[in-house]
Image 1 (cartoon, one colour):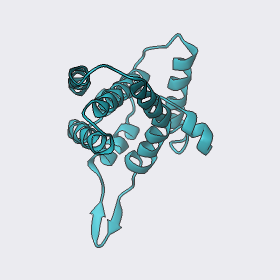
Image 2 (spheres, rainbow, N blue to C red):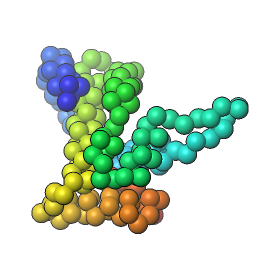
Image 3 (cartoon, one colour):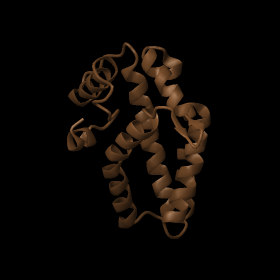
Length: 169
């Protein structure tokens, strides 16, 4: 939330929005299902590996394994605070390096933060007794629960499932 608010203020400080901002937001939103899938598969479901005599096991991967052991335990639902702060720093650096000028990076940062909040909120709700009323939310909840209770190798999108369809998971 703090990153989103800061990014919106920074973006407004650097001037008005343009069609390029809209294009950038659309591109990030379009890529999000694949990014969510890749992070879930490659990072969250990472299994410890020996590399040059050292066990490589990421904190966020261990936290996600705990989350799978007890999906209804709410403290394990959220991204660990340390990982969240590291991700926020990485997002700011990446967009600042990748995009020209001062304005566009803040549009990208605000969009990324918004999608992150969307992800966390829907993931949280899918692990509570809340029952959605809309078809899209019912589908999101159903797929996520299938991921937890039927087969964790499928339904790897948490909030968006286009990559699952594309990659047949």
